[in-house]
Structures are given as structure tokens and as C-alpha cells.
Length: 338
Image (cartoon, rainbow, N blue to C red; front, side, top):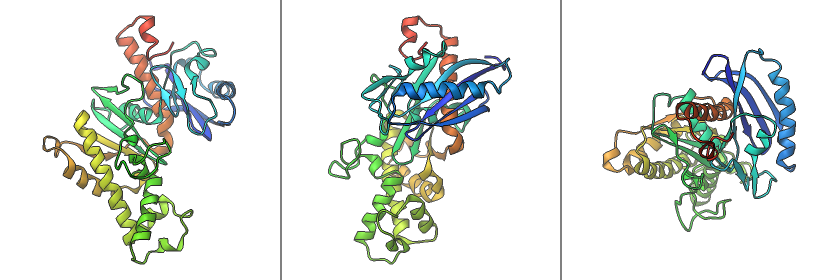
């Protein structure tokens, strides 16, 4: 890798799609954003992206060489290069997004989901730069996770390993959008925190400013502000959220024995309100061999830049693996498309 090399990181969301040219140090050299237009086919998005990418590329010095493209997308299958049944995107059962990009760009292209991309972003540009074993948990509307073992993302046979958000807390518990009941993300996420708050408001009698709101008006931010002000209902909601998160993180530690677990996403912005009780419960539920050995930290990459940097880190990682371990074209098709 030379100082003249850059990659393109693309983050595809249900509402907007952002991209940026990123060098090996993690510096974003030019960025852009367009509406995803989720009801349109994927080909429409790729064609519109090509126009905007070219416009931003023209602002960069000609000496910079574009070496590859990394993509973060919902329900992305790293092994196949596909996006499968994506929520909030009307793309059908399976779309080979890597193939669509390679029709326009004769470059290596790799794709993964947003939580995996966040983990690689933390590995290359964040708090995990000197780690080989760690987990990143994304706490937004749902709960995503990226698991790194011995310096590599864990994908599993299907390409979808690491869905901690859909491990079960209670088989007779809350309904999840995935179709199951009792999934972790229905308890630990911005949405889960609100559901817990509503349950506590129904079960307990303490006065709370949150009682002045109807259920549609209660947001995770309002619960955070109330908890910070000492509201007992909001404090209890964070405590219960932390208990369940600590318990399930202890299970995850038993599987991979990470050095650290990083939290990112909107709910992680609660900081010590969430971190302090979660650390306590994590230690309580850990198998004794792991106690005192796993750090619980906030991700270092700012939330607003993590998606593009994560996608860029994905392709930097693949390029470095390909350079260090030349493989046959058949082998390359399994992960680094191109």
C-alpha cells in the first residue's frame, strides 16, 4: 500500500446512502450523500451513485489511485456479495450488489452488514487498533454486532454469523420484527428501552414526567434526560436494560473470550448511565475464568463517520489479506469479489 492509494466506502441505509473516499490512515478525502429511494430497484441506486461518485472523484488529485470499494448494507452476505431480504429496501429476496458495482468499476468490491463494518472500522481506525479479539455492539433502533476473532471478522458458514441481537432473552417475551419472540434487541436498543419504560410506567406508581407523554411520544433521548435528572422510572429502565445487556454479553464472552467489547450507536450516547450498570452485570454473569479480563468501552470512531469508515476498513482489510496471501480466482470469489 502506498500513500497514493485510496478506497471508496459506501453506507447504504433505508433513507440515505453516504459514501466517501478514504485513505489508509482513515482520512475522508471527499464525501457525498444521496437519497436511497428505497422503493426503486438496486440498479437505480447504483446508477445514481455512479454519477455522484464521479463528481466527488473529480475534486481529488489525479495521482490518487482508487484500489477498491467497500459497502455496508442491511442484511448483506459477505460470502456471496448479496443483500438478502433487506428491511426498508424494496429489492426482493436477493440482490447481488457486488456484481452491480463491478459492472461499472473493474475493482475489488466487498460487502458486509453495518455492524461488521463498524467492527472493522474500530479495528483499523478506532479503539481496537491493537486488538485481535473483540466485539462491537451497535445500539440503535435494533441491536447489531460484529465479532472479531484473531484479527478476522466472524462470518460463519452462512455469512451471517454474529447476530447477537436475535439471541433469546425470553422465549415468551416481546415480539421482534424478525418474527421471533424474546430477541435481545427487543430489550436492549433504543426501541427496547422505550418498551421497558412503558412497562415500568404501567407497573409502578412513582411520579414521573414521562407520565405526561403518550406512548408514541416517549423516545430513548427523553428517557435518558429523565434518568440523568434522577427520575426513578427512567433510572430503573436503564438498570433493567443494563442487566439484560450484561447477561447476554457474558454469554458472548463465553463463546469468543474477547479482550474488549465496544458499544456504539444512539443508545450508547447515554454513556455511563448505561456503561456503569452494564459493567456491573457483565462481571456478575461472567464465568469466573473471564472475570476482570474483559473491558467494556465506548467506540472511539464518532457515530457520524463510523459507517463510511467501516465500509472503507472492510475493503482495506480485504486488499491487505489479498496482498499478503495471494489466492486463486476461485478462492477470491468467496469473499473478496473481483
